[in-house]
Length: 282
Figure 1 (tube, rainbow, N blue to C red):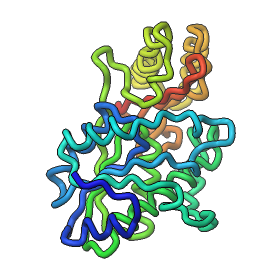
Figure 2: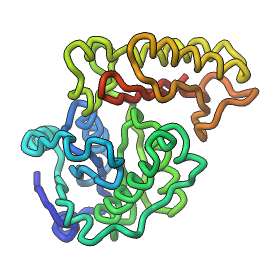
Figure 3: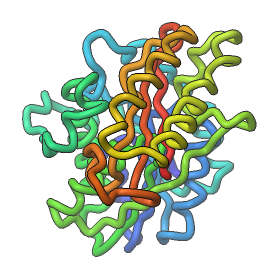
Figure 4: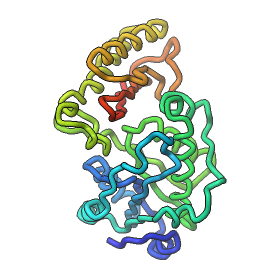
């Protein structure tokens, strides 16, 4: 596996590649990231992964400085997974000057759910992903990028961005990888204490119960079910931001006629100081 740091080095490494397959990460890799690499490998003629902790998607009070940085271990994991090129830019490589030009996603999608509780988050995500795409896919007729479904709204924002800008990139979603007990794998799971980890599955269980109840309810009943789900999770010691049922197509509340196969239950909540997200399509 070749490791490069600058955009020029990356483009040189990919000069003979016609269809890269790309996985963007912020490092601190776990089995979920490696599953994305495994999905990407047969989709291109070179598998590229990036490691970059993107300052633009962190709010001032969030964990940018303390976000785990485990580069040596991450590089070894990617090499063992069969990655061909690791792009590990320093901040000055990706942002050599203040990034005053930014990608502003459609507020109708980006300003709800995660966007409501983390304002500006998706602008930071869209901007860095666009820049990574330009670094990896510049001059290529076609390419593929693989993103996990755990970050459900993020995947939708990136798909819309690629569609709106007519980028020659296929966006492939990967099902959420879970621990043996069903907890969605996340780099932030490492922040959980042993006791918190024993309770962390309660978020997924709350979404399962909400989806089950919502499947038998009318759209008018959903706000009551969502409120009850949040109260039940709060009673277990969590601080929920949202537990909600939305349409998969646009993340808006369901309407009459929306039913099985069209909906997703999404949740975000803090357990102690750790904020976890999860979702369940149904």
